[in-house]
Image 1 (cartoon, rainbow, N blue to C red):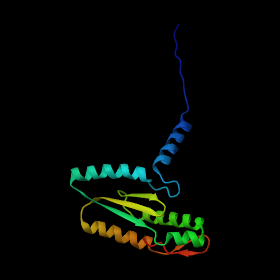
Image 2 (image 1 turned 90 degrees about the horizontal axis):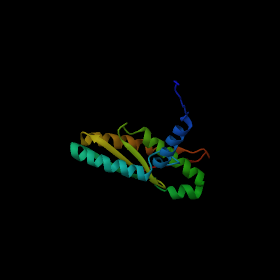
Image 3 (image 1 turned 120 degrees about the vertical axis):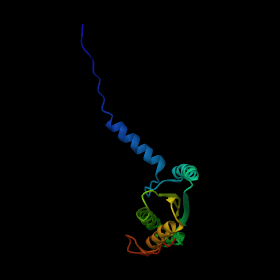
Image 4 (image 1 turned 180 degrees about the vertical axis):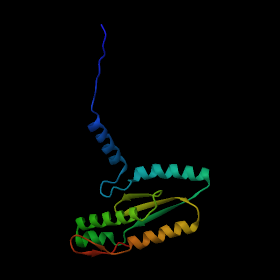
Length: 148
């Protein structure tokens, strides 16, 4: 007797679910940024890497001034929208090698990696500050100022 037996499985759905679960473990649900746990893992790795390579890095902590007042006066939906706007502005104004995370509430952190000079860090910080300090137009037709 000769022949062969073939078994084929479509793992598309299970692979998609695996990817979704992995992102849920590493991403902040509201903003899509790294969450605190994922950021801490990356920070530890980057510190080791940069120490060995003798490269500089910078760690920036940011929060939204008067955020509680936004929540109290405009509501939590407006506060959530402001957090999303702030997160998007951070993500859009860093280099591709940098890492942005939401630690929780209105607290964010940015890790600038592979810095070759202080002026590189200063340029990125200036760009970030210009982006996040602009007023934000919220869907409820209220304007909120999100300075960090």
